[in-house]
Amino acid sequence: MAEKQLMYGNHALVEGAIYAGCRFFAGYPITPQNEVPEYMSIRMNEVGGVFLQTESELAAINMLFGAAAAGARAMTSSSSPGISLMQEGLSYIAGADVPVLVVNVVRGGPGLGNIAPAQSDYFQSVKSGGHGDYHTIVLAPNSAQELFEFPKLAFELAEKYRNPALILADGLLGQMMEPVEIKGEPVDPKNLPEQDWWLTGCKGRERRVIRSYDLRPGKLEEWNWRRWEKYQKIINNEQRYEEIQIDDADIIIVAYGTSARVSEAGLRLAREKGIKAGLLRPITLWPFPSSIISELSRKIENFLVVEMSLGQMIEDVKLAVEGRSKIHFIGHPGGGLPNAQEVYNKIIEIRGKR
Amino acid sequence: MKLLFGRPKGLTEIKQRYCPGCGHGIVHRIIGELLEEMGIRERAIGIAPVGCSVFADEYFNCDMIQVPHGRAPAVATGIKRVRPECIVFSYQGDGDLAAIGTAETIHAAARNENITVIFINNAIYGMTGGQLAPTTLPGMRSTTSVKGRDVVKQGYPIKVCELLNALDGPCYLERVAVDTPKNIIKTKKAIKNAFQYQIENKGFSLVEVLSMCPTGWGVTPVQAKKWIGEVMAKYYPLGEFRNKAKETK
Image (cartoon, rainbow over all chains, first blue to last red; front, side, top):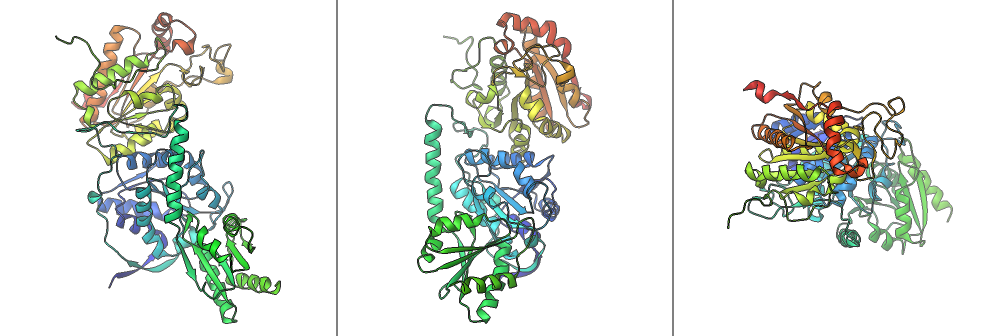
């Protein structure tokens, strides 16, 4: 039987990253994710990895650019204002097709906002937060277990497609203590096969160049179209989601992360009253699980989107539904949290409207 | 037939696109020669900045990465920590290093990161058409200081070697110039030192090179060379500012 441990979400994330073979971490302190670099500084020392506390998030993301270009599984962690500072670097990294892992423990915004859990960085995460046409693969855990598992998944997807990956969490998930099952084999980074784009010194081979620019007429357009083909592959192959009591549902909640945990409790309240509510939890926010939502919209009249924001993911739900169903919304911006009763009440309200 | 003079193995065959009289070509050649002569080309990883020398990733015949404006020392840190056996160098201009990348420069130096920074100071933004740089001299004209740098409104230039010399961290800081054959030889010696100290794990080395930009300065190449000796080197004195490697020998 696999080993089970009681862990804080933030510690589970660190252990998951180490388990995934991450041996390079660079980051700048910011609440509410400070437990990640603090614990990481200890663990990296133990496993012989690199831990760097940087002068800024700009430096952190660029250290990742270098470390990943040199072939390391490299990761940083920050929270919303810090992630904003990393967007320049992420654009270059996406433009140079380099895999890195960025964890955003989202807090209330905009501006300095507050340090409460939030989901208001959805747009920034899934719609290319920096300049230029690009996408990052975005995973949304909703438990300590997934915080442990997703670094490995994120690195694997990032490397498979040579694309930066994001894990979108929030302070609540990081502070929660839950049992975590240590599953699978730990990755020894020494066993990762050398890639034909790694910068290692050109001994015995042609020199390699990593760049995100091409000034030759038409060439950048061609390059971008090739990246578009890559994105289509990701969209076709990597949509991930969890279905909870979808099969007989006549109303479906769409929520991720902490909102999904709360919504699931609201769903239980509804089911106790015999109301057939279901929950569709996107696990990948990009690629967004549009296919399943599109399919469901052919028989479901009402969707309820629950988000800790003014309403961001709701736009992707609307795009997937293409006007076939009604979309209802519960939103809590600025660090506010939804609660189960609220979700239940909204379901009752929607049913009353029929 | 004996080859008396040719292209060093450290440079690619690609034709460089720098302006006539520009100093980049000289410094490129020096680095290209040293990569070959010191036997480090096959374990070198170079970092190209944003600015005129963005194309350095085409010109140095070793593994290269082109990075965001000013962030080269951070990228270099990431590479070097992952591949300590590699010789990691960044090649940066004054806008890149002393304006937008000031923080990355200072902190890499303070950490005594075992990397080499080649800093080209031509006192102007060349690539974007000759705007005021952090190193533009008082009274010097640029497209954003057409009557000359007014220190009351635009402040004073940054002397990078002097600034970094205030830190405990860095191993080696030297300012050189490429205006005369004698100075070019000194430049090569300084860059060789910088690479050598990295090989010996001595830590952060930075060579500041006063370099001509006749196009940006609006003068002839000959006038540009003269101006370095007569004006620029007076404001930015040449010489070794720091050499911890020598002290510890």
